[in-house]
Image (tube, rainbow, N blue to C red):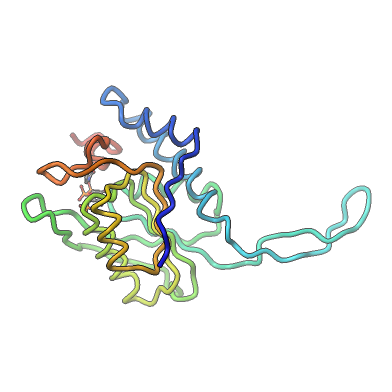
Length: 209
Ligand code: PRP
Ligand code: URA
């Protein structure tokens, strides 16, 4: 069982606070989501394996560490997860990108899947599933179930804001999945929104409110 990682880095706290602000407009919101995703990706890739190779500097030849070539994939949960992809790819440009489309039914709060396209070799890749919000945890749990059904074995989940309810559900459903969050909020309100949260992440990223 993996304990959730709440990344209390001051840069993340600063950026997440601005993200929450109701006066932050679409352009800045999108930029902040991307920057936060990049910082989170830095933390979530700490355990990537390295290998030593011989490199000649202008001074001498010695052995140095480089990435051992583990294959990665990033899978945003559509649509809000799309906002995190650029930030992840800024650090790992060779990662393949899959997409899974889910929306949360506003009445039942249960996720409805409408799209899934993953790299053909997903079973050989370490997968980072990204979505800014982990509220009830229904979307993340279902997305990861579908991604596992298609062969993925090693999965991390990166969200910007998590609710305790979402962490519990995802943890109970997929105890093998490491959860990374930039902030852990208090609770959900009666509409399933995270409190204090930031509102509807997809609407704020794409300006559809
Ligand atoms: C939001 C968010 C997550 C989901 C979280 O997506 O981006 O995918 O809700 O809620 P849950 O943990 O209770 O499932 P939404 O359904 O609003 O779709 P969108 O990204 O298309 O706006
Ligand atoms: N989805 C969002 O975008 N925000 C929430 O607070 C909960 C679900």
